[in-house]
Structure formats: structure tokens, C-alpha cells
Image (cartoon, rainbow over all chains, first blue to last red; front, side):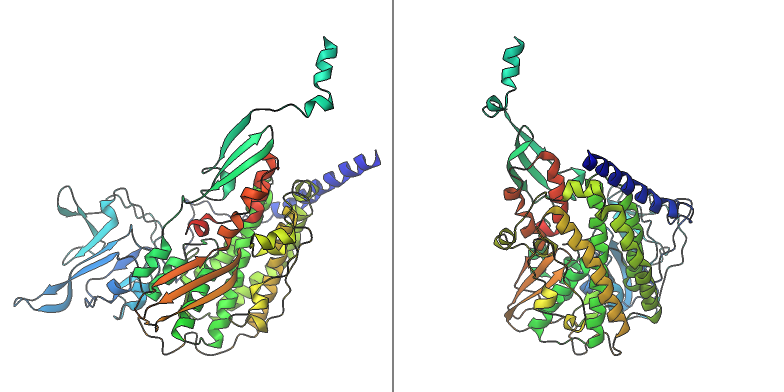
Length: 170
Length: 381
């Protein structure tokens, strides 16, 4: 009988102790954030979606060799006489394959980097074609994708950029 | 008539009664299996008579993939084995590759590696602590554990840019040097974290309901643990004092003062308690490492962009969060490994389920499975 009541006492005490810890934190500010309304700004080194700048790129192929999953492809631009120049004709990143490992950014020799991880963590794709982003000469800065149905480069309409943080670049 | 009924409930006749055997699929989508693990359970009433763990749902073939990638690329693959504690995975591959290439790291790189691995151990054991509580019906500790785990992941994000697949430890060193601000924030976190461990003890460790569910359940004796080649907290929970950090120190673990927590009888509670105690030791190691962090370069010089080790083989093992993680590398002199084999602790620890579950009650399956703390990414690789 004593054992029974001791058991009841011990269990109730444990429940009270547990609630006491909860009570201590009840009046402190919450550590969670309400995501779509508030947003965390990632740290400066955060590895978000890759961005590319075709003005700076010298088309040296180092990022292609550095990528462990072959997600980057590029082609050299050529001048009138058909000789290769240090500019890209087109550059494409397959986000379906990207590992977010920063090996391409580290390999990039230009200053500022021509391929780098932005702080964008809200990368949304609605079609598989959209995952392959292509940067083409005289195209706008944000990547276009090649639509297999229409055989043309299209604007990525599925990607909703709801988060406007300045991309890190060094 | 009532007499006849009474007789069937008599203890002597109950022994001869046999119920039909029933086959249950536990998983692969069971929330308590921590991944995609299927256990085929044959039960008789409430007692398990046969258990067959079925793995392979998360096989990605990283061992084969490494044969067509160079050594820098392979570090990226290692992140994907034990995804809740990826730092030791990075480390063990780098140690094996450095042995093969004959490169020595710098003292600062070694210290940073130790800090990151121990911080990752804290993050990994916090995940275990939280989910084990959920497995046994205690939801509150999970919220507290994740509050602290988030802080560790924030520190990782601040230093290397990723929260789960770090790719931080590189051949010959680490990715980036730790800034003084990062070290300060880490010390602050450690100060914040120490009293939290006492709260965890109140919330879960010494909770009578939790102890009743785990003490004396799933006892693995020391001899059994050795026979099954268990490692990590599962082995030490049975009272076997084996820790790679003590017995074959790597990355300068011999310079740090820490203890190896041991369990007594190898029950689920002992394995759990080993992990909680290990978090305290990790805090000790990290604070020591920060206090005597040597100056100097964080990356060894003279490491080729695309390393081409001479033909040969090497083996390196580390004490990862889940046990003794080993890598066997064979090189034929090319830019990519000829063969890589992973000695994954989760895979070996999981194997004891088929023997250990027999004779247990169905309600204790999750208690045992949770206490082994497997990560299916490492089991299937």
C-alpha cells in the first residue's frame, strides 16, 4: 500500500516538475517565427540557390570540372572568325542535380565571382524543365529555362521570388 | 456452464492455448522508424516470434558513385550517409584520403575538425533525445531539444553555409577558418547549453513514466554486444569501454580531457543515458578546444587541386555519433578511388534487431528501435 502511494507521489511529482520547466519558459519570448509573415535572413555564408553573371564569366570551365554532379554546362562564345573568346555563349545550371556544396563557387577564378550561392532559400519549381536554368547572351540576368514543348527559352514563371535578400557576392 | 468457462481460464489450461500467428508490416512509413525501415513482425498474441528487418529503401549507391568522382567530389557524397551528423562522415573520408596521399593537416585544422565533430554530436544526440521522447509518448522534450539543435545548426550555417550537408571538412584541412565572432558565439552557446542538460534530465531522463518504459527493456549483455560488433553508445550502454577517440585517437583527441560514459546493464535506458552523458562530454571537449585553439593556417599547403594518390589502400575510422564509422579506400593511382567501402555503424547496430526483438512485446519494439538510434541514410548508403 505504501509502495502504491509512493509510486503515485513520484509520478505526480515528475509531472509537476515537468510543468514547472514549461511554466518557466511560458512568459519568455517565443523562439519560433511565423514563417510566411516573418522571415529569417540567412547568414552571410549561406549556400542558397546558385546565381550566375554572364558579364564577368570568362568561360574557363573550372566550375564544370568542380561540380560533383555535373549540373553545370556551358559553351564558349565565338567571334566573327570562329575563334573561341573568353565569354560564354550559354550557361546552364540544373537545380535538380545541384548539391549546394559550393565547390563551383570556390573554383571560380573571377573577381567578383561569376557563379555564386545567393541567399535565396525559397526556390520553387513547378515543372521539371524549369529546374534547368539557362543564361544566354543578351538575356536578362535571372535564368531562363528551355521548354522542351515549345523548344524555346522561357521566363521562369513558376518561381515566385517572395523573398528579397541581397545575394552575397565576393 | 459457468464452471466450464472458469476452467478454460485456469492457468494450467492457458499454457496449452495457441493463438494464430499474425504478420505485421512495421513500416516503411511508420513515423517511429526514423526513416524508411520495414520490419516484418510475426506476432503471437502480443509476443513477437519472428522479426525480419528489411532495408534498402534509401540506397543511393554512393560507394559506386565515388569510383567515378575525384576525392574532392567524394566528400560531397559522404554528407549523404548519416545526414543528421555529417561532419564525422566528412572527417573519416578525409582522414582515409590523407593517409593515402600522405598529407598532414595543420594543428588549427585538427582543432576545428574536433570542434565541428563534437558540435555535430551534440546536434545528433539532441535529435535522438527529442525523437526518443516522441517514440515513447513524451512530446515536450522534443520541442526543447529542437530549440537547442536549431542553435547548433545556426552556428554551422554561420561558419560553412549549410545546415545539414556541410561539406566543411576538406582534404588537408577545412573549408573556412572560424572567425573570433563565431568562436565567441559557440562559447556562449555552450554556457547556455549546460543548464539545459539538467532540464532534460528532469523532463525525460529521470521521469518515472519514461524509466518504466525503458529500464529493463531490450537488455543487451556485454558479451552479446561484442558478438554483434555493436559500436558507439549501443556498445557502451552495455558497459563495454570502447571509444575510438580514446583507443586510437585521431585529429588530436588525445589532447583533450574527457570521460567515456558507460551504461550498466545494457537496457534501453542505459543506451539513452550514455547519449545524454556524451553531450556533457562533448561540451567539455568543445570548450577545451576553443580555449587552446592554435593559430596558423587552416588548410595544409601542397595539396593538389585534383589529388592523385599513389596506388595503395588505407583505412580510417572515427567515433561518429552513432558508433565506429570506418572507411576503406583503395587507389590504383588514378584521380578517383578504385574502391570505397563504408563500415557504417547504423547498419551493424540494426542487425541485432532480428535476434533481440524475438520474445519482446509489440509495444516495446519502438522503445528498442528508438534506443539503437539508426539513420537509414547510413544503413543503405
